[in-house]
Every structure is written in C-alpha cells, then in structure tokens.
Length: 348
Image (tube, rainbow, N blue to C red; front, side, top):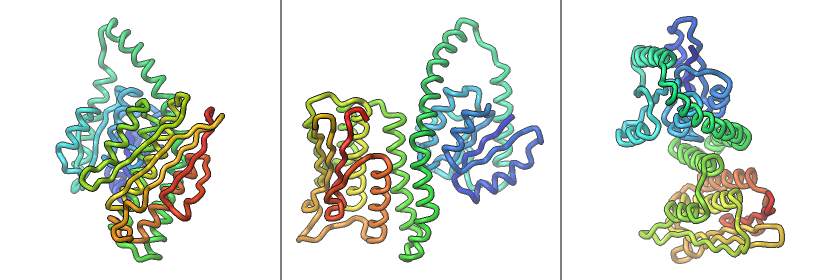
C-alpha cells in the first residue's frame, strides 16, 4: 500500500513525515512539495491514498482530485487544509468528492493517523469490490477513453508547464527572498508577489491544459474577470483576422491578453486594456496595451499597489512568463511596460 502526501509547506511536510513513520513497515509513504512530482508519481505508481493540501500553488486540489478519480478510481482522496471557509470546501467536495477532510494544524498524531487508517481500510474495500459484468463493461469502455485523454493531458502537463513552474518556483523561493531582503519588503509584500505569480500559473494551466472554450467563450471570460463597472476598468478586443483562428491560437491570444490585464488589474485603480488581432500572410500579430492616460488623475498614475518594489517584481514575473511562453517582439515595452506585442505563425 502506498500513501502519497502533497504538502507545499516543507515544515508541515516534515511534521507529517514524523507522524507517518508510525505506520506499518509494509506501507510506503511518499511526500512531495511539488504538484508536478505528484503527477509523475501518479503516472508511475499505484497510489492507495492521496492526501493533498488545499492550496498547492500552480493548480487546484480540485483539479488534481478530478484527474485522480479518472486515472485511479480506487485511490482514496483526502483533503488536508487550514481553510475554514465551509462553503468553499463543500463546493470542492461536490465537484471532486474526497473521502475525508483533515484540518490543520495537527495538534496530535491521531488527527492524521486515525483518518488515514480509515482511508486505508476504504482502499482495501474498493479493491475487493465487484460489479455487475454488463455495467462494468460499459464503465470500462468509458474509463479507457477518459484515461487515454487524461494520459495525454498528463504528458502535455509535464512537458508544457513543469519548466515554467521551475522558473517561478525558483523565483519565488530564491529570488523573491533575496529581493525582499535587498528592498526591506514586509512579509505581506512577499505574499502578494507569490500570489501574483501563482495566479498566472494557475490560469496558464486552466487555459492550455484544461481549456475547452471557443473564441466567444474565452472573450466572455476576459470580460467577466476584468471588466469593472464600479471603477470603469475594462478590456476591449478587436479581431481583424479574416481566417478562422485554431483552438491553440485562440488560447494563446486569450492568455496573452490575460497577462496584460492581470498585470494592470493588480497595479492600477482603473485601467483600460485595448487588445487586437491582426493578420499577415502567414502570421497573426497580437497587441495588448493599457491606456496609461486612463490610469491617471491630474497626470499622476493611481496605483492600488503602492509599493514600487512589489510593482517592479510584478513586471519581472509577467515579462518572464511572456518570454517563456511566446516567441515575440516587444517594441515600446520599455517606454510603456503595459504594451505587449506577439507575432505567431499560423502553424505554430
């Protein structure tokens, strides 16, 4: 029997490791802080019980559990979290049913061991369970199809985003710490930077890994996320392309506009993003820019993030991701860091 614990907080992971050392010797315990490592382990091994923290950074525990229920329906899923928002946890349970909730902090070993023993017993029951042959045949065919799709997604996930996550995890764990010391950032400032980076990575995963919207659907999501009637902030999009965009081009354009809008939303009290798609013979040209005049009052830019050093790191993070994901030129970016230009071949 194999237990997999996904816990980004390394101090808490070490505490759990001490508690789980009390399990019988024939129970293998694997602990990781990184979602991409967990995904690889899930692909390589039969996992009996998966325990995951609610907030795992680059993806959601709900996404992880949904994938696990397809790839290994016998695996018992357990959520471990400090989250006290009952509605949020119940919403996740309705979408990706988990076996039991473990609340942090763990004051006694039994608070982890007792529910884990129940989960191990549940796993044994699932292994012994039998099904009606006809129902099993139908579900097996559906399962094989779903699993093949999932496997492709896993392979794409490992290929597409793990190197980007490594860049950001390095930036968050190393560079931000040093940057914070250099500029005397408070803990709350570094938390803002981490949350900013994680938000970008989470959206990247939602779009390129799990995204299934059409052009209209993605454009509607942009409006939903960034249009604000109270402040007047909004995103306007013009599509000048005469040929139909492929699914990959639609996703690329959406995420490109998202980068500009997300940066501006986290920086300014008011913003106006103008985004366009233009078409050349064999190339699409994407442009997105925040009209800085809209973000000014009496000629002064009005920030909601008033710490210049935090704003500079927001720029660095966005620029890093833009350069990593897209082949692009960015003329004018130094004069206006809210201007982005990407030229993508139609076959790319």
